[in-house]
Image (cartoon, rainbow, N blue to C red; front, top):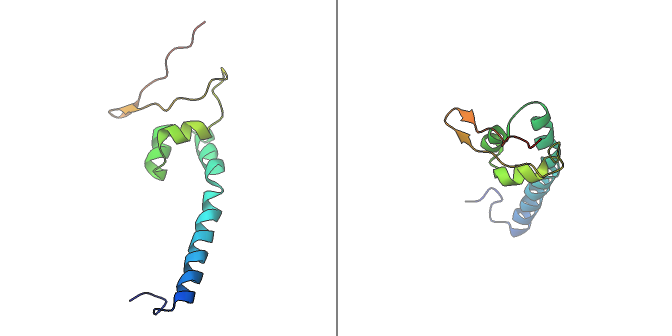
Length: 88
């Protein structure tokens, strides 16, 4: 039995409320991911905690210092793989 007791109007209200709550949290996603990265969490840890794809995290983060988009690096064992050395 549903929590709304079978009342379709109450079910719609509950669904709208749940979606509004989700939208409120989701609207802050990028801000929270950027803050976590700025605090020192790597993309893999952010991925593990949030479930976001590392490619999505890379798109959210500001470009690397050279202006290129960030890459989503993969951990190997207990360590995250290092970015390729910069030219120059």
